[in-house]
Image 1: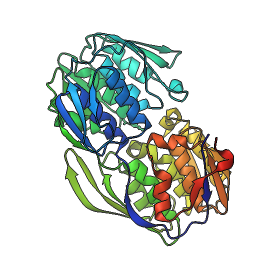
Image 2: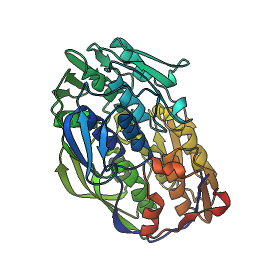
Image 3: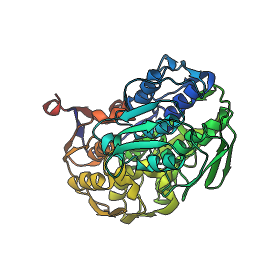
Length: 440
Ligand code: S3P
């Protein structure tokens, strides 16, 4: 088990840097690149555990990928009907996105495939994908009531449907749209709230006929997808940790350049600004189908806020780090409508509360959210990440602002989304080192 020792009471975090590529866009770039005809050139791909698993799964189905993770990476598309039976189960590791999106793709194949994953992924519900695929006439079997992995997708000819998703989920929406590529006619997904829209944008860029009308998105089956050039922007969900650290540490100013600014992902920026956070976006620009820009955060004295409704899907993965900011904000911050967090890499409402309480934060768990009262002076702690990358990074930032030296155990999971996280913080002036006592 790898652990990090974090020196607290950090001040003067300063610098400009970039973060690794966006995880959601990286997954989609190789999946759509594989299904397109011709070459897809990808730069800025997130070369981390989750996306590598998706890449390996595609390679096992006959897709050739040159220079995986390098800036001149090329996916040689096999076309919609060109995937081959991998002849063995596909292991998606920790990646819920990889598994759910591939389930959509596998619905349209003329072979049957089993997908599995690590201990965390094997606890995550796949019924949210099995149900719509079932309505499309595709049989999916999994374990128990929630259809947890290993899951088996019995590919075939999906029927076009109109599906109302019960919760706003980009993974569900994307899986249905990907299955819809293999259907005859129009497949439509209607969401109760706005989830991230990278699949729609990228499908359109690859030549699919996609129509979007507020919360309704439709795709016409059997498109001819063509390879594209995809430049992956930095992941705003990773930048969030550095920006929060700058906001909370005295005498700090940090700029993260080239960060994704898709409005379905920028909820945290709006919330931090509403809390009085000094967060500024500059050099907004459109590259390909996505907007990006530079974000600067400076030391601030945040005040409490309320977060819920449609704002939650726009900052879903940022709830743990927002909760940490809220421990330093004056007043009571209420986060509601976030029950989805209970089925992430860990039960993030429980693990966020548990970790921040160990640091001395006043964080109460609610069935669908958190109530955080601040400001509280955090003290040193030894905490475990529960194998969840976003909890591990939240704990490291908590350790930086706490008084004393903290230890965060089980940090190898950070590589899931943000390889180089500790180095990035060190570059800004913090003191983080491997904790020998806890490392194997
Ligand atoms: C993702 C969607 C989100 C998010 C996850 C990545 C995606 O989950 O939490 O980290 O790439 O589609 P939902 O399916 O709940 O939107």
